[in-house]
Structures are given as structure tokens and as C-alpha cells.
Length: 115
Image (cartoon, rainbow, N blue to C red; front, top):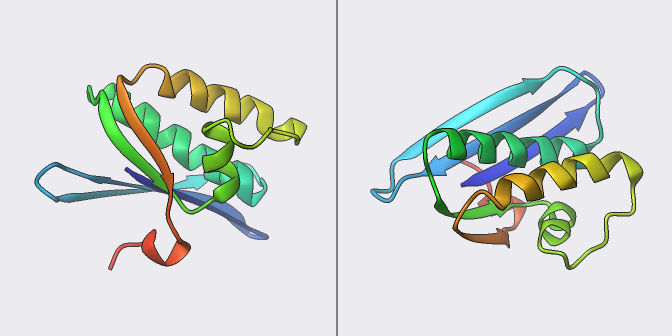
């Protein structure tokens, strides 16, 4: 699963792409209804993807995002210092704990897009 979030003055969005074992791409995009920071949008993309994976019964997966901050916070390598990110971080960890075999990694922004 690849996730990405973005926030701009006119709104925020989140994207998730699942890659099946047969290399089929399943892209999803979401409009976020609240104005938020880029990091909040990244977390929301991760959370949405994790919720979808759990709902369809996925238990093992590799997860990639281009936000070093979010990836390293989820891995426990960075501390969550911003108060507004703590609930997102906690929710992401709750969802990750429902999966059995996961790998979370960082990818460059250039590698985190379709086409």
C-alpha cells in the first residue's frame, strides 16, 4: 500500500494505492473535509488505507509513504512533538496493531505516484 496526503489553501486530500500480489493497482482518492496541515493529511491517508485494508481482510502488507515524519513516527524513530498529530499517530498505531505482518517504509516523493 502506498499513501499520500496533501493540504493546500483550498482544501486537503488523501490518496491510497493498493498493489495486489498480481501487481494490479487499486487507487483511491479522498477529499478531506477539514482544513489541516500536510502532516495531518499524510496521517489521514495512512489511516484511511489501513482501515480499508482491515475491512477487506488484509493482514500482511508493505506500507510506503513519502512523509519521512509520518513514517518515522509510526516506526518509533521520531517522537511525536506536535499535539495535533498525537491522535492521528495513536489511531495509526491502533490500526497497525490489527495487522499481522507489516513493513513500513519511506519512499521518495517521485516514487510515490501512479504513472
